[in-house]
Length: 408
Image (cartoon, rainbow, N blue to C red):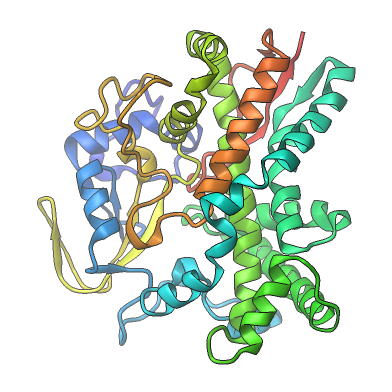
């Protein structure tokens, strides 16, 4: 294959492990939607769904679940012997179906309600301004390292009760863990993912024991109180939840803030529109979530033989719902490849849909709103120092490694 734009590849040969796809997946998504919106990847032995209607159906359909049907072999590789402790850790909420998913989600939902999240605004505004004060002194910054990464890391660590001195370790572990989720990654990424998850498990075991003896005003202490009431949240479920809340509260928002900022700078007409009318910030966040969706794919298993579109899917087959592709579907979104911060309605699937709709959506939205508003109000002449974008070799998430900018 030569280049993406020449479209010389055959649809039946498509492979998401191609480097061209990691750099810019959208031309590939477009062709798949046009020719094969429910597409079987024969080498990877799974289905990739890029059409909006098909993706939306799967997200809402009980014929698709997060667990492999009973009696069918798992596609998930077991960790090597030195990581066997991970086998004792139950699946986190993202990988559960009702009724377990419903039970655990209800137990942890209170801190993520709109009212609870709104109360965090002053602290997040103070944090963002302090980060930008440091950048202003230098006249330039890396938006990933200096803004997008610290905001969600500090916010979710504070909510959980994780000491801020440990945040840097968490960011590294979380990055390695999330990369290992990508089905296109090789053995090295999986190994680093196991190591990162074990580090997180050991850390939270220690912190949870500390909180048992010395409770604090934080989410971990609240979860311990729930667990100690009996039969609602088991000890290992508590640890699994801590790990999930940390990486889910961090990774998606890093990508939303950094990639969204890049897209606003590249689309100067939209940036100027936002600066002239700050009330557009909420629709702007939704559009940036649609335009470059932080989590590009969501995995499911077919629970029974099911027809989606024109394709017959067999029980036990893995399915990747490419929400990043569905959110560019021209059948649903007019001028889908154009960034339009006034777009309304905007039924994007960036936060999922149905029972697995993102628990932290309100928090991610608030962090992004404050980050964009403060950054571009303080530095309206901001410009990119790298037009191409330093993209991570990860196709499951749309992630920038760096985003250097001049603030003058």
